[in-house]
Amino acid sequence: MYVKQVFLYIVTLSFFLGVFIASVLSLSVYLQYLFFIIGGVFIIVSFMLRDDKGVLFSKRVCILGLVIMFTSIGMLRVDLNDKIDELSQYHGEKIEYRGIVSSLPDTKDTTERFIVHISKASDSIVSEDILVISNRYPEYKYGDEIVFTGILKLPENFETYSGGPIFDYISYLYKDGVRYIMYRPKIEKVGENMGNPIVAGLYSLKRTFSDSVERVVSEPESSLLLGLLIGDKASLGKDILDDFRRAGLSHIIVLSGYNVTIVADNLMKAFSYVSVSASPFLGAISIIFFALMTGASATTVRASVMALLLILSKRVSRRYDVSRALIFAAFLMVLHNPRILLFDVSFQLSVIATVAIIYVAPIIRSRITWITERFALRDVIATTIGTQILVLPYILHVMGTLSLVSIVSNILVLPVVPLAMFSGFVTGVIGFISPLVAVPLAWISDIVLGYIIEVTHLSASLPFASLNLSLPLSVTVVMYLLFTVFLFRIYKKRPVDTTGRPLISIW
Image (cartoon, rainbow, N blue to C red; front, side, top):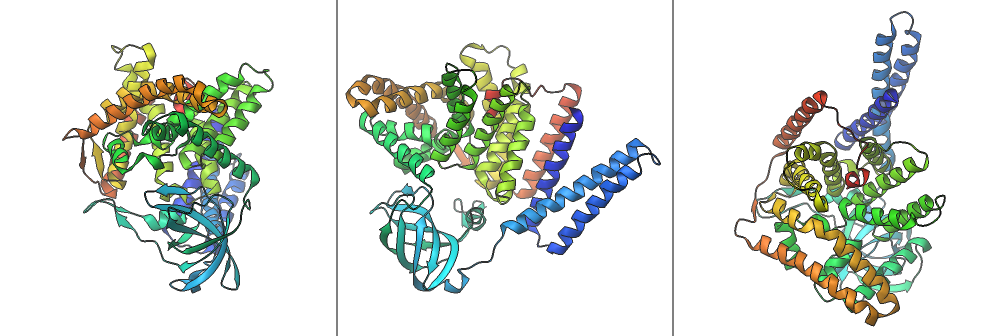
């Protein structure tokens, strides 16, 4: 078991190193293949030296070979992910394009944003994705085929606030294969239902559920509920969204790992009443469909993969190691899209927060034994403090905003989130059948959601709620190196058990 674990860490971390190197440096593909061959030679030589030089020396040579080989594989994966820019010749020109809406539209104030997969530019056949920012109306949906005319523009990086950190918007879009933006083009819909029928059906179910919730739950509570359940926060409005940001509660309305954990936990409990043989399969399928329905963000995918690994471990009667589950989930995601390692903020925050829950929260929990375990309060407080400590340097580097009330606001809000989600989900489902019957349940949802909004507003309204403070990259790296040394020294004396409380750790 120990050998398998070491092999997993060597392979994955070396792969991540290769992806990192290729993302910041431009290396010849021939050099990358040369590294691969060198790594293979080292591995072969290590077996040949086993008898002559001893087992220890042979193992070291083998490990070095594995590091070189999988570092080169990571570099080659980035090179494979890159493709020729087929739209560069049309940059700055106003021409006609044809394509299919390939993402779930994101509504913001007076605009609607969606990705279009272009199949034709003028008279040329192409295959490229662009971000279209159109007027709020008419609305478009996934799978619509459109003909549109406009000017391709390159995205630009911007300051998160005046004098604050520069957000790398260019790389953020490019991680999804998007190189260009088009603002308010002239659009004509010429077809529909051209996307994946399964994804289209899940998006339609999401819209139907949203309509059901909005019929029986008042605003802004209904918008908050949709943010909690399916990550749809578009209708909350800028002022309320700013309140959540200042209070350090933004993570609960963007379908964080915490929300996905609650959904996964309830799905597992629901299907436990079905036949033992069928429940793991039904639970896994439901989690996959939920991830697809909500847009498959990096955070959702990471938590979903870890939940699926938990189901698999139970199915094959193996102990679930959350540490290995995290690194394996991250490996699968980076293997699929290597650009997320450096350019997807939500992926990075999700991984850092999960590491905090695995390694930092237990330390905090052991030091707050005076807090009651009723309602899982000790776990909530330990997890909240642990994640806030570990994600803070990265948030300050990327966003440059420090919430001084986040720990208190999270402790006040997180314990009631499962109740809000459960009552809201039942309300929405019953609303399908009869909105009138769903009204009493909607009252409960209104009370719980109203409490969350009120706590958020009061926390954000405090004059010292947040302040602008940014960290340079060098300071951020040093802080995480110090965290790593600190945790290593603690767990060298007292190894951490990463097989317990798996659902909490999926967050």
